[in-house]
Length: 365
Image (cartoon, rainbow, N blue to C red):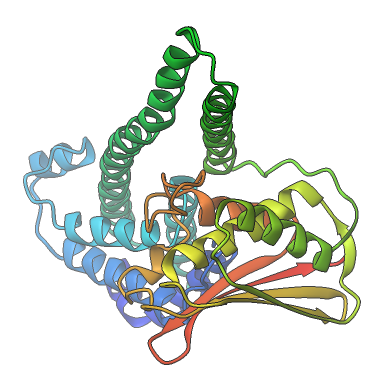
């Protein structure tokens, strides 16, 4: 039996083994269904079998082995797989690992069958390499586009507080006998400088998370209810008209990084305030055995279904007006901090039930 016929006849065993491994690579966030994990592997294997069935001359084989083949039969499946994995937050290293796992599953099962088709193995490796190359090129193109967009948005957002500082400095430099006015200018300058400082801190967190690292934590005894109250107080200071309701139940004590956890609650509550259309924002903190949960709910327009899979990614939805999250890092960093604590955060959104972000945290490491 040829290798292409073996793949066609044993695709279910191959895809099952591949899907189990792929699930271990998933980043924090919305989980992929088994169908989503399996479908693209099926598409890739179908394209591989099709590619292996195309007759090749020795010259054509030589060109293809060098990545210079005229027929790029694996291009569509490679790009489609990359787009799907980027949508779910997979880093490029995880996608490379997927291709290695798919290759290993096919070759191991074929070896165990006792069959031999060296030409088929060579054609299979060529097809997998071509698909992997297309996926990586797609990743590189999308990364470049994301970088350019991010730099543009960041430059725009930094211009506003920087302009306020420059204008304030000019006013303070002029002779002025009005101490109240000077105090207001100083307050605006300090607020703008602090906003820029928070944005830079967010960028550092983004860099850590994007490079595969974890957000550093300083754990100490904390109480989730007190953290929520502190975060709401900070938001109310800048938005006195915002309506927050806190419902707490059970033992909400644990070992967390208080500053980071306050940042998560502020990000989630600030996001709810921005997108809630002026509706009351409800925070519900509950004890769940060895863990605690916090649900942040708002009314207003639901998150569009096409945006929902990307809502934890930078630039996906934007952040709180007048806060530190207009470059769209708030939800991304919130998920990274929760993940560093060993927890997870998810979102549901509909026109009837509104939008709810739910965070689950273990009480101890």
